[in-house]
Image 1: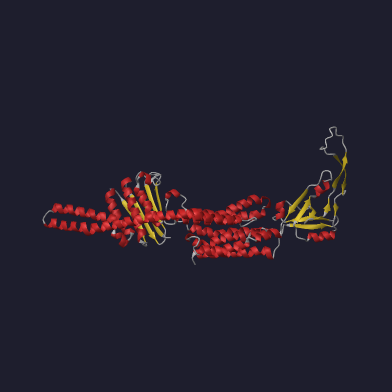
Image 2 (image 1 turned 30 degrees about the horizontal axis):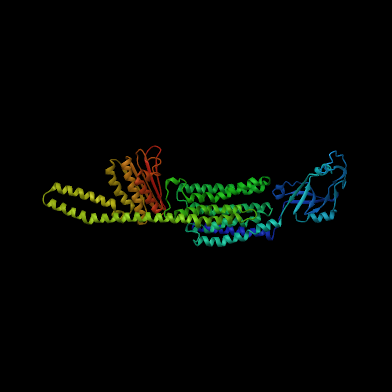
Length: 570
């Protein structure tokens, strides 16, 4: 079964599992702050007898032994309140704004007094907790009406928070169903068509698991975090598969593994270390978002952008933009973890639409138009080359051959030899313009001919190492051959032997490398080729861009120029 199919199946399965589990806190489970209350019947008061170490109460600092002063708005203990009596004081200025002094005369009640009996407290102890006002036993004993009492209040929205987060499930379901259809159908761009299910699943899953995050249950919170991490992996792998350079692709896969491990660790630590959830939550968001963001950026363009400016051919700007945005979109769904939940994602999607409508797509149309014009120029050049080669071969070369025969017949051996030399030169020019062996047998045999011809001009060793298992389309083979032709001409002109040409053609693509032992090309030569008039480099770049190949021209540290071209079928 193809890898893409497995990615789609895994992505949809994770999203549907998250959807089903996200409904459970709204149906079968209830909100649990992690506080367990008990009744001290002798003192007629409600106390905290246990606190779940990873629950919301532990995060809020609730401690075992704390005494409940009020619960859900019902006062359980009346604390002594000071009673003041006014005491007149002489005011020589007679200023009416000076308040009368107050004197403490007593407290009401005199001591902390329970309001409810033990039976009523039993009922409260079994009730869901919305809010509590607590006090430590030492503070209750050490406080007074004059000094006051140090109380501690906590509020747990319970079902209200679950209800709010439950509102994110419907937008998540819409993203999964409508978003996947929109992407898979190609309406969002052809480059995202194969990523439709993973992208929709990675964006919708964080919305499905919000109820699990807000349930207060440590187990459900861990499960929500791990499901969010798992949903990112199929999309990240799909983006990594779009990376054309093998080194960059390996880097993307390593980054996916590292970010996935880090995100899973933070998802668990977020629950097990409740006192540092603010910091750990930020780290969890960064790690989980990084699973898709970094592969998306790598797939959008090479790490070394100066190596080639146009590796993608027509529509390359749109493809790069779409892949980068695909990797970033789930990060905004992860950011929608608090009320009003889906608004960050909605704002992000709206920004994408506006940018695409008024910025990216107009630029892409301009780039596509320029690319088409370049391709027309290249095609016209090749057509003119073919016409000239045919005219020389069918006209001038035939007449020259006939002239050589007449000179030989007349006994003019010297004139016949000159004619043969000119004929050989014309045949070489025909080969430069359009090589029939390239059309008939492919790049490998054409490179054999080219290397033999170049070796006579180089004055040293020119070696070809080739493995051409398959042939590709004529336009690709022609572009590859022209790049090799230009690279060898530059090696003879600016470098020195030995010159090594390596060519490999497989069903997965074509790789070409030309190395010489000369002083090496300047570091910035590819970047300033047009300004400096290095039309050979420009010609190679245009040929590579025409077929969507990656061209890299650089100087080896020890000297010598390295020209490498990688092409993969799209």
